[in-house]
Image (tube, rainbow, N blue to C red):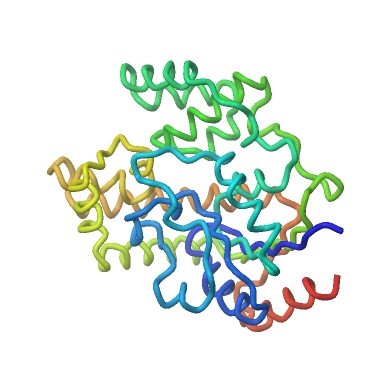
Length: 303
């Protein structure tokens, strides 16, 4: 019998934390963070990392495990996450990184494709000589669907997608989708069907709250530690826009507007990604969370 795993997924600011915390408490479950930015240490505000109080409510895993100077791949995530899925009595995946879910779902996941430092170096040289957009255009030619999902400044993932294509010959967007027979786990996946305008308003409000909480100071502290805007973690939303503010290359108001715009676009791409996953049960946005929690518990315990 396959191990049962709950997943609370969906785009940024869609209400995953508010749903997952009381759910985990009622099921005596533990949360496995499924967010490609929350793995980085010293980056709490800009990644919307769980607060101390929230972590005290429910055990959390795969937070603060990587230095901001280091890259972190889908394969690395799956290596760390699978033992947790196997051993925790009630594992609950929470996050919006669809590639991580894909890596955990498929026996032949994209994250299992090997790496080639020569390929990576070639595209990094291209980015240095011609800019990130030139590398992104290469991805558009071989995998336009993945290119549409990734911002050109998300260089690490753009290059990884190109690397996967060159090594395996199959675009990331054409990787085989999991079937119930192939999956190593029995997933119970849920996401809020949040209206677009509501999602956009929540994204804007989240950015304002991050600025109020001191995101600029957090980035200043990272810079003082020797982190530069070229390091992998600084490609995350909020960080890459605010680094130029510290050097006077961009005003704070301009950076905030840019973060809001890119966050909205990113949330839209996330929603498009998850809409393709037929396993996900979409929850009504205006229904009380308690109703959804009871439904998830019933699904999980009765099957």
